[in-house]
Image (cartoon, rainbow, N blue to C red; front, side, top):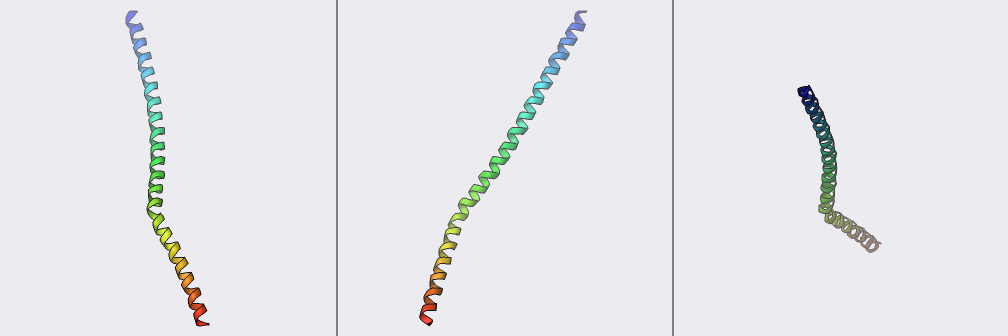
Length: 77
């Protein structure tokens, strides 16, 4: 009888351990998904940071070309 109780207690402990393991794995997967999301956002921000000087220079170049066209147009008239 004592062996049966010991086996049942061991089975109960194993089942609890399995439940805890499943919870841990689910939480880990959730955290890994969040990590991937944050890494993608960080990569996007880094890319944007690197591209912003190019965007500023392109905008300034557009303004300069527009001003040059305006000046040339007025000189030609």
